[in-house]
Image (cartoon, rainbow, N blue to C red; front, side, top):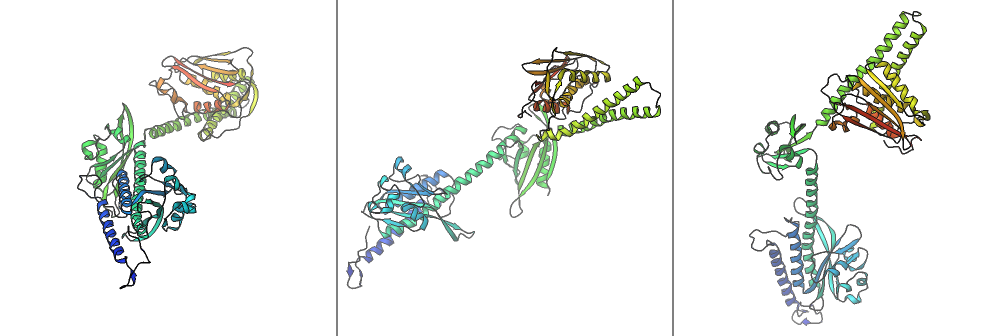
Length: 573
């Protein structure tokens, strides 16, 4: 490098004697910078014919290429400025500046140690002020002691800001922001000059552009990967077909629907890959007609019939040109099943409400029309029937009101008291047996059965559901056995019937709302599908459990137990 020497003058010009040579050197360096720019603009992998521009704002095709570009910038810049070390520090978005790879002349330990805050040292000052700093002797500069310059073997150096230029749509620079700083250290000529500082500033703009591109590329790739991962893990099938009828995107759920292996179909015409006529018809109609399309079709997935809702929409660009069609294939089997269950529930519940209402109305009208004609025992029996039907009607309505409470996890108040568990069960069986003469009821209550602390009305409702279900799912009659006993500090009820039983695959379903066991036997009188759902909830509130053992064709045993001493505040729901 050539240094200015103000004490040496040319008498003929009155200027420093070495100014012409300095101007020549600057001109030479500018040509060298242009040459380096052109060299960096070449494809980084040798032997390739394509070129890759390194102009500010350029996007690279891979993160590896960006790192290689930064490495070459650092290597050429260090060679041009005669520096033995070169490293750049990036701002972490908070308070720290940290050295990054690639770097020249620093080992891994030194690279890891080279970090500081934006409020300390020369690096922090350059980052804050956006002005370069040249240090002739690091040991004499107090600012250098605020960051690990001596630890990385720095004797002298130049630090310039890395300014990322922000451009408008016409590629004009409208603003800039500091993303870090660039250091060259230890000049082979003994110290760095002002020309070196200016040259490094030029290189810093290129490095900032490349580093900014790397950051943008990393974020873009991260967002792209996140989008791909999201689409792949969606339960609904997603297909995007371009305007040329070729599949551009198909996620895992869609591949499963059409039985396609991973990677199959991308780039192919959809009608050559998708072997489902209705789906192809929807895609074709949406593509050719100026409106969105939809349909619901049956698919066979792993041997099971499923109902899939197909919704196709046209995708347009900013100029309103058609870019393609996106189709969403959503499994609505459960929605259909729930709607069907609700319809069946409404029908069944209406019938069950009409039964008690008809009985109450009939007996009331009879008593009014024939006042005084019935003996006292008969009147007492009629009043008992009317009262039982009123209780039955009340239970139906209460169950319906409890459904939304259970679904939303609302814990109802329990009216806790000490009561005879055995007497409660006997009362339930006596009431049910008086209305159902087809079955033989047997009640086995353990002797010296302890009293239970709990909500008697709620637990009576649970027992009633089990006893009434036993009769409902035993169309041929038979014996219904109700056992009441204690075990390990719990009071237990087991209701066994000799009915149709429950298929193994439906055992877990019986506890769901509106669920009813499916049987070919049309004589089975299905319930509302709420009793077991609500019963299990109230047993849980008592810190108890509920379950069933069943065998198709031989009957079922439903059971529940609750602690004798009553529930705690943390009852499971």
